[in-house]
Length: 79
Image 1 (tube, helix red, strand yellow):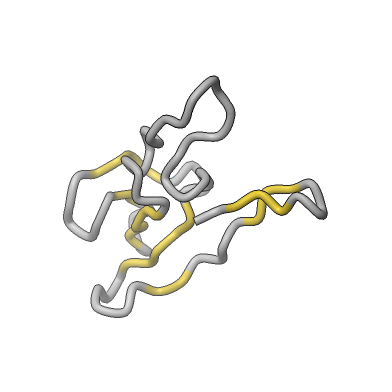
Image 2 (image 1 turned 135 degrees about the horizontal axis):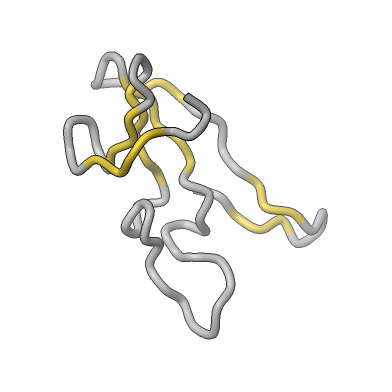
């Protein structure tokens, strides 16, 4: 889950990692702030990860999901 580094004035994202119990899937940082969208007048749950802060990516297909085999959230644009 990304966070704001006020000292360096930048958003820090966590690296992708293999999902321990789900072969073929990896956990990726959504880029939001611990499930909250950046900016705005008030805190709002992220629409991409639905407040999770993390998404799962299927390694072969690039499909994104809230959890492996769960609600799909599209495809990784890098794929």
